[in-house]
Image (cartoon, rainbow, N blue to C red; front, side, top):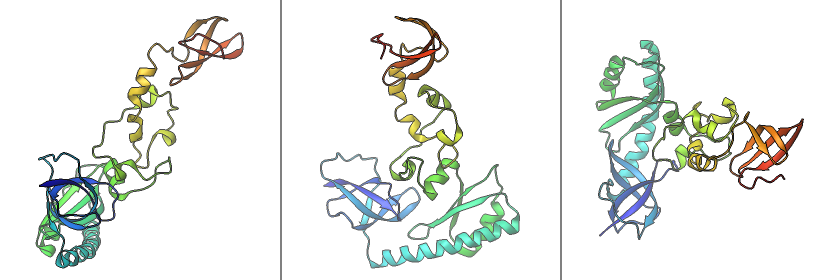
Length: 260
């Protein structure tokens, strides 16, 4: 009978779900089947009561001594391959920056992730690398968000980046989400370490949209029990606004229409 297992790759903290027989335990090292080929990973969670999704990839086997030896060798060789790749990039004068390199466990593929401002013709680079490593070479261009996910880091909240810790899919983030939450559109406040809009803007967007129904906008002139005034600030979640009346700022709750 199969179970669902949470595993992590390398020294990452993001958990991925795989299915496998009941013989695996937490902290076991295993070999798993991925889209990139066989990979070495660590079991961090065993889900006894979680339904098995048949679309999940499988744990192939418990890692043996030879697997561990190959994995450690691959880490060392991938580091050397990264240096070699950067040397070729300099020689070929290619406008690209390689982020990391990784061998599959059985060395059927050597993957390089890179960033570039435009499309890059890396065919000659791939040929040079293939002539040395005699395996399939894949050079994959990634965006700023993917780079942050690969490199890791700490967000402005002081926590490890969400894309590293738990995000399985990158959502589309728009500037309207920041506007919906009445945030100052200051790049240093609403952009993450990747230079793109914070992923966490999406977490509460639906709640802000719901809470803002019926709320005035900044600059609107509204009637209050104390006369007409211009809305100068909003507290959306508490459904409260600050209104300028005869030169004085006063707080009003929209639903209760009461001054505080």
